[in-house]
Amino acid sequence: MHNIFGYDKIHFCNDIFLTGRSEMIRTVIWVICAVLVLIINLPLLLVSLLIRSGDPGAETDPAMKLFINGFAPFMTWLAGARIERTGMENIPEGAALFAGNHQSYIDAALIVKYMGKPKSIVLKKELTKIPVVKQWMDSLGCIYIEREDPRRAVETMKEMEERLEAGRSVIIFPEGTRSKGPQMGEFKYGALKSALKAKVPVVPFAIDGAYMVYEAQKRLRPAVVKFAILPPIMPEEFEGMNTRTLGELVESRIKDELARMRAESPSGK
Image (tube, rainbow, N blue to C red; front, side, top):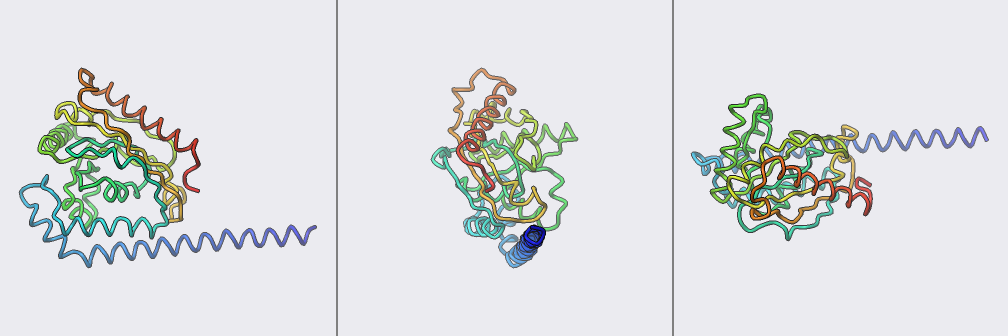
């Protein structure tokens, strides 16, 4: 019995070691590929920035769209994420405010690839400190928010409203940061005010299992990621609501969808 248990223990340890090593190799390869692709495509980035100069809310140029549609799915595939998506038919033709939960870095690739034509994503100002990344985010028409600066936060809300009124959709993560796990963080409803003022649909979306790709173990490993776009909440449905009431409605729909996903089958497996 001792030999049997000893044999099992050795092989169990070897399996853990080999799994950990393959995950580390995957992570290193992913980082190298990401850096190389971004550097190789710098000329395309510069052209896109020149086209957008003076108009941050302008449509993303066709060449950049083509690159994004190839780069995002390739990087999610390389990371080991297997995407199960539903509700793509719920994406409105015109401008809308998309609001969803935020589990992982991989979320950005999902929304860039699967939400139709490019949209302005609201991101933390701190991300602009990363070399080259800021330029790529600028080329996508991202909006930056400084949560610690109330005056700048008000300006960001105004910019969101202007983009929506001009016909460009905006994406927000009301939690404000990654949850890095299955539980949703506290929702901050303020950004939903832009939809009330611009009178555009609010489209909730839910992501589950994304944290299993990287955040759960701090290195990349294969996992199933579920991504669902829910039916839009039309302006006539939230007429007369205040920001908090609309925010609570959006939050409850996302939580209900996450519960449905998990009841159907566990994510990340």
